[in-house]
Length: 220
Ligand SMILES: Cc1cc2nc3c(=O)[nH]c(=O)nc-3n(C[C@H](O)[C@H](O)[C@H](O)COP(=O)(O)O)c2cc1C
Image (cartoon, rainbow, N blue to C red; front, side, top):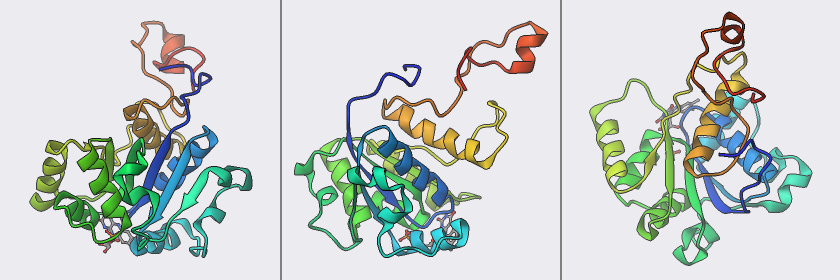
């Protein structure tokens, strides 16, 4: 992993929002990918838009692209949920990866069973069938047996199950830092360079180093 200044070559990714809590993770992932120069194909379920309203205090705009700063939108393609003719619906589009974040238990179950009733589920199904990275970021607590079985099934099918479980060892002070922890984990798993989080290193015995925290010098 670089120090964040060495850019990963531009990738083309599908980011799908479903109706789990934590729409902030999905929004931030899109923002960071666009800032890093990657092309993003975005689809959202109806429940995701409801969560956006409840959690983000944002009335879902007719065009989701307007949630992002103007200059970033050039690399963003927003697709309707029923747009099964769109890029993420086809294996021939050769997307680098598909990320479902947040991933509701309903969408998780449908992906695990190949339901493909909308573009989000179809994009995930395409990633699995093509053997391309599929990252699902489930969020629910407590987890029932059905949820756990569906996650295990997806993991066995080759999906990367990356629960929205921010760590605290980097001493976060803001919600934004907790969000970036999870987004950073997604990017790490896809080998996309970023500098969203400070990286752990062997804790020092020195009291002054301990006060600063066990992180690489110069990294945030
Ligand atoms: C504010 C809010 C938070 C929710 N949080 C979760 C959650 O964390 N996990 C989950 O599985 N469902 C959650 N739900 C319920 C899902 O949105 C609901 O099951 C929906 O049918 C999922 O649809 P989708 O899979 O098509 O997005 C939440 C709903 C709302 C309104």
